[in-house]
Amino acid sequence: MVCLGNICRSPLAEGILKSKVNPETTFVESAGTGGWHVGALPDPRSIAVAKDHGLDITDQRGRKFSPYDFETYDHIFVMDNSNYRDVIKLAKDDIEISKVQRILDELFPGENVDVPDPYYGGDHGFENVYNMLDEACEKIMRRLKL
Ligand code: 4NP
Image (cartoon, rainbow, N blue to C red; front, side):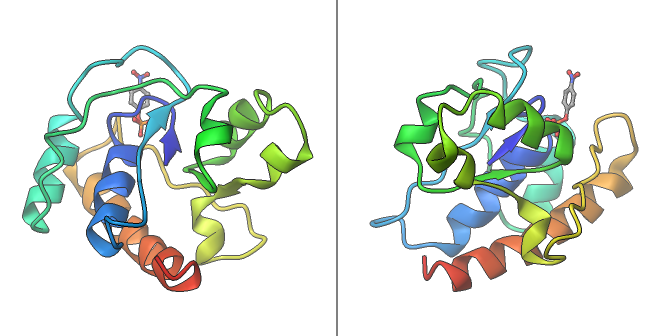
């Protein structure tokens, strides 16, 4: 799960998908394309909205997306079109590019819809993001039989 800062959207996506999959067979992690928040806890507003929905994401720490992640992971879900461009720039071939998908393609195939960045908005934005990620992760879990 990849966003820009790895403190707002992708930590929520990581926590939500983790809560839906079999942990014995599926490993979920998140990262940011930027490195400003490496080692940091998720944004307090993400922690709070996750808690409201019964999820604890305080075990997460910020990390930067690495080109090695293309080898480690079968699927790379990005939150928006800007993340998509930044991630595919690091891919070494078409096989790596083919692993990258905008997460809202699960709900709106082919429409290239962004998960809005709630960083500069109010708490309402975080609830909205939580609900879209929950719906998208439910579809991912069913489609990939995780
Ligand atoms: P995120 O939100 O990509 O959903 O984690 C952001 C968090 C921090 C910054 C940008 C976006 N920032 O510029 O520090």
